[in-house]
Image (cartoon, rainbow, N blue to C red; front, side, top):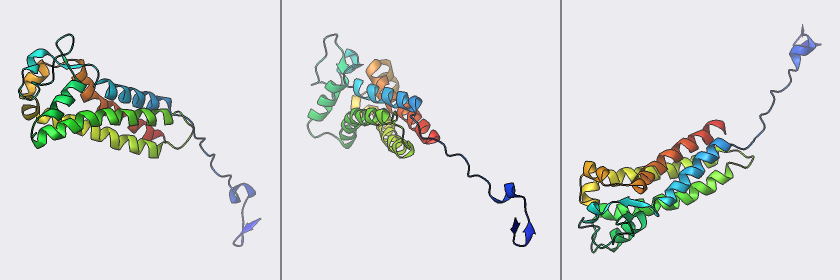
Length: 184
């Protein structure tokens, strides 16, 4: 056989195409996204602050829970009911509720990671949602003085598990979305 006037061996002329990778489920990304989504929703239901933080002027109308602790939902409702809230308080209410809504979206995307399809578009959507959730949590931390009427260090001294779930939801979602983007 010849190629442009030269003799070439048949094996060199037609190389077989590279094998195509089969698309399969990504259970590791699914676990990270499902866990991030679950804790994004659970942060509304578990206590955030102890009663020492409940004396804050912003949260005075929230009412304490059965054990004297404020849940994320009660904090959201108190911030939402504040008369003429500042922009920091308004953004904090959006961050708290946005974390829970983003958690629901991460659960749906985590379930989609179990399907044998291209995970990059889903991973990109999960990355945007996770980054927004992490940015909302960072907003609340930076503006703790305006939102909770305590400093950042005092706030961390008065928090319970719900606060840490709120902070960790976006970060765990970023890990799961990176995994989905890296494996496709």
